Amino acid sequence: MTRWSLQCSVCSYTQSNGHQLASLCPDCGQPLLVRIANAVSRDAISGEASLWRYGAALPLAPDEHAVTLGEGMTPLIELPHLAQEVGVRRLWVKDEGINPTASFKARGLMMAVTRAKALKLPGVCVPTAGNAGIALAAYAAAAGMPCRVFAPETTPPPILGSIRAFGAELILVAGHIGDAGKATMAFAKESGFFNVATVREPYRVEGMKTMGYEVAEQLGWRLPDAIVYPTGGGEGTIGIWKAIGEMLEWGWLPNDTKKPRMIIAQADGCAPLVRALREGTEKATPWENPTTHASGLRVPGPLGDRLTLRTIRESNGDAEAVSEERIRFGTFLLASKSGIDAAPEGGAALEATRQLVASGRLARDAEVVVFNTGSGASYRF
Image (cartoon, rainbow, N blue to C red):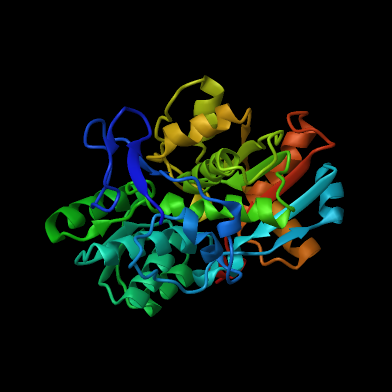
């Protein structure tokens, strides 16, 4: 049986009973993370080709039924011609766009809704730059739970249409996701709905970490030299790094395994984490007037800033900002050379890889996994 506690990512606070409702740390207001108490054997991995093959490593009670739509175990596709284009020895693309709801957000929101249902909460709500809103709406529908989504008015119309199609109550907000976040917090306080915003609760990261397990398993239980992840709120980057630590702790990987460099891609028009890394600060200053057509990257003040920056530094990683023109170039290059329906966030990650190689910050003999975090279809209108 899986046993777990909750631990603050910054201070010494621990909540020994992980089954209780949890949001941010009550002592310092920073994100809580799940700590799996028992070592999980790699022999426990079994079952269907979905993230649920790793169920023994996820925080679920024995009698708890997951709210699932078949998410996870997305393809990891090696693309030698793209490796040549960006200048690395080997390159794979992990295509999260084929998840239910067409993005990596399905993984995290599945876990958040599963826990919310188990705790018999009255409903769920979230601020979104797009894909998180679709995922929450879909999984809330699967769970039979009320759902309210707050999204900026500038969110791409196909995304807004999908949120409505899954039956969620959609509230459009002037401004950016930070403004939507304020509206969500006010609504959650008055309604009792559970606010499942990025790293505001500890379970979305647990769904996200399965991307790290999958990369290792799909590479034959080894890791690449670098993982390049397009990053707005940071939960994907945080989750993958958490998985790598767990796999090493539990003996899933050889003892001499070298951890990959965690590299994040952001947009020139909203790059708070890139700026913070360059300035050497532990947290990011919110970005003023954030602008980018890659809506998943338009997160000016991520709550997960400390955790993401810590991940980059612990892994000897890096962070790169990409212009709007080069995001479009990277998106077209990825789609036209691979057949993957790339989202602009995936294009940003590919272009960031090329820029880092060109500047000498990523070795030409590196083996690299680039994440395409969503489907390009969500952005076309």
